[in-house]
Length: 245
Image (tube, rainbow, N blue to C red; front, side, top):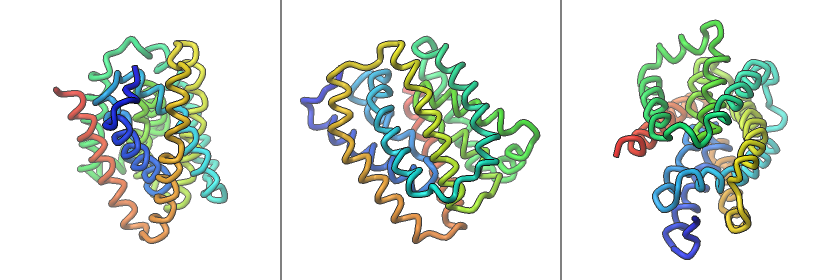
């Protein structure tokens, strides 16, 4: 299941995790989807998603610690209930829906909203927008750990200060990834080899978080917003290349 004897696996895993850690702690997880597609090049997608989940929790915990004083609890009250419902829906579909279909739909949304700023801002402020994007984030996060783009579609329009955005996103995904442990466990997604491999990859995950935390302090809020849109676009392109052979 895990090609741990292949150097390419370790190279792709380390690159993907470092980039994901940077994204989580420096740019609000906009490119967090990159690690699963990279690993899916050398192993089954369900196994890649199962391997990454414990590592995401490690990165979430470290990122939350960095930004624990900037959490926007009002935004969390809007996002988390919808995300929980989305996780429930995603759990029912876990292993049943073709990943390519979800990847294709999410890729189109990412690219559209990254390139069309007025629409993104408008939709994020519609009544019920937090339920729509929070729910979609929960679903896509459960299935392929691609919850960042839908959540950022909502948060981009909210125009939160940089540190508040980073903190709120970190807590949102910390909660979501914790809840995802149950359906992954019940479906028997983990084995001893996979968990030991995840432990071996923890240093790469923490290195990415450390780099991201240092980078964000040198970037203005305007640059941060532009970069988030760029990561949203990049996430869409990555998902599109995976969905369309």
